[in-house]
Image (cartoon, rainbow, N blue to C red):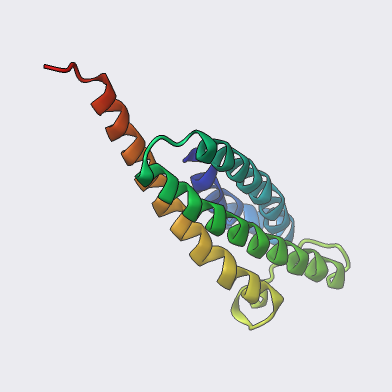
Length: 145
């Protein structure tokens, strides 16, 4: 669950007004889009491993959903990374404020429109999976009367 939630939580550090004022938003933006795929790939590998070991139907359903949503979030994130690096190149490799990258339709918007819903669904499903797994473990640990 942490690997799925970390990209969302990390965005607040990378998009911090203090960071963006000090060094522009291009470098932190690209750093975020390098970190997030590493986390999402790790989450995907772990979800695949857990799918093979899933003991309940609810766990298998959650993990199968993650097997779809995590790659979509990863693809969207990589599209956003490509757009951010392209923009940095257009800006002469200088980290500038780039609010238009987020506001105007384009490649970054396309990637974000894929990343955001896929990541949000992944986050919700990861919560459900954690709850289902905890409930199942608790049931197995209860003594039989």
